[in-house]
Image 1 (spheres, rainbow, N blue to C red):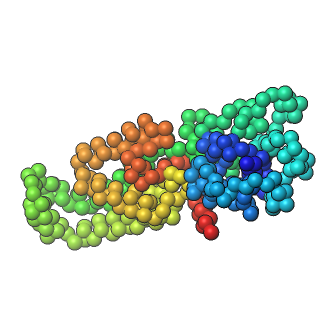
Image 2 (tube, rainbow, N blue to C red):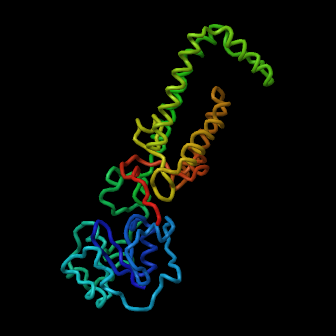
Length: 325
């Protein structure tokens, strides 16, 4: 099977199925690239054929025996000097360097050199290499981890974002905390839910309504702003400030509403809120970031729960995935 790839209206190929899967795994070929091979009646998005996975196993109906029909490939621009018929004749791939606008090595220097099985370049791509010129990798530093077309957020940036969000929450509750402190603070002998409920009702009677109103307005405003940023941008206020974002682990775009809001926001709030003023909340956070620091993809238990990644924010991550027809 001869496989052709295209991006930005420029074509490369042919490649074998093994070469394609190696490039998908390394992130060199992306899910938004176009693909054509025998058995397909038109160019299609790679992710549509792989079900947005980094592995392609063509269905039996996609495998055909006839030779490549050059007339089918004319929907994508090729370089004038790279005649497809000649490429089929020589069994050589158009370099991905050319596909992505990078300078190629001269034919004289590569003529007698065994090319890498994934491209015509003489080095082996790694999982930390992406050839997308417009991707987030332009913001990567030497110490950053790169997965496909995204740069993983450093653990310290994630810690800082969490600290900012918690600080904002404390500020929203500050008028209430100050009023409770004037009334003697929280008792330490609340052993049952009935005692806690009675204490809460007693506080509601003693704390001035103006103080309660101010705290409620501040809390409601904070929650509203946080939800707007999370739904529209995959970022809390802390993540906006630190320049990081939550994305889907597979597509590297905004996760679904259920996973972004239901799993990573509401469920986590329900888990942490009862322990807001105790060491248990800090312990849960410590476990999350310890797991992330030991994971190749910086995945903590928050990310495992929602199947997400936390990455450096880039505008391309906000582009919606095209619907599969």
